[in-house]
Image (tube, rainbow, N blue to C red; front, side):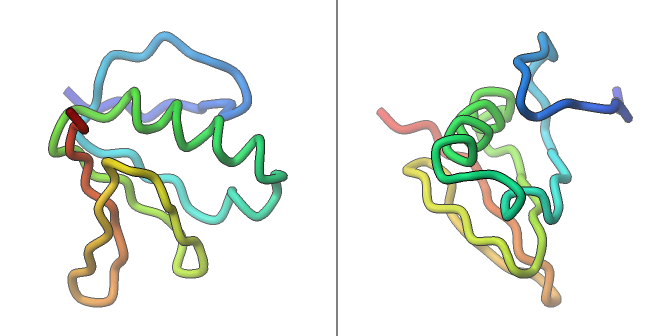
Length: 82
């Protein structure tokens, strides 16, 4: 199933785990604390092996999100941390 939803990243929304989150060019609008909260919420919503696609100028540093790139598109893949 595919969800195309408006999502207010500053508020917790009860979405099920998903395979892909496309979230481009939003992190620079928030301070470090808000960024960490948003990234943690995204991590929680991704299935294990799920993909987070971010903007070209955004770099995510969170244990369990591994950066990769294909054809110039940067993304992060979730691996559950034991």
